[in-house]
Image (cartoon, rainbow, N blue to C red):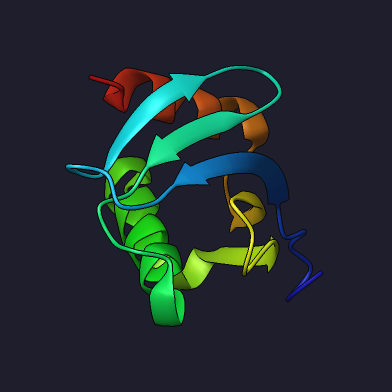
Length: 97
């Protein structure tokens, strides 16, 4: 709680596929969201690409998105500040090609 205001934090599971032709959402389900990223997994490039992409698609600053688990894995748990799980899924589904 900050200044009498509760912080909303939501976590979702994202399965990342690196080295795609372009960064895009492949599938949105209740359990996992699959995203193909253009960057390779070397030196954290795929993670940086993922965070930038999520920030753009969700219309929130990167500072409100954090990888809390899976930094070196394709399966990641991502925490979002100020968005609930349903809103995250709704926005990503709407952004899916």
